[in-house]
Length: 157
Ligand SMILES: [Zn+2]
Image (cartoon, rainbow, N blue to C red; front, side, top):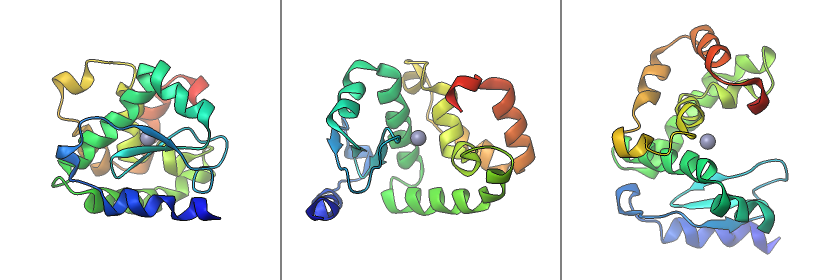
């Protein structure tokens, strides 16, 4: 139960996204259920277990995915709050996609679309501002679905 409150000091001590240099993976089995890998949380990566936390050290693509979210938060007026509110808003609006595909509302979230599309390109953040999510946000859900189906291998579904 105490695990639940471990996120409080992370939020309390949070600095603006632009001040975050690196995001360590921290285990929180209360907020992160097994099957989930990581969640960018106010400058840290929440993971469900030590094993998963280790993955962020050995998999540059997984780490890159979360670092793309960090850069996206910077592009939201350098505000974690604005990033999370927008994230939730896009997730709610994409909920109908859950009827079309598993985890549709999550995978068609503009922030996730950008992160998944570019996580394997380790130079992405060196060459881009991570604002592609804005283009996806303007698109209809069905157009996002078409892009998703055309560019992302089935294995990540
Ligand atoms: Zn993500």
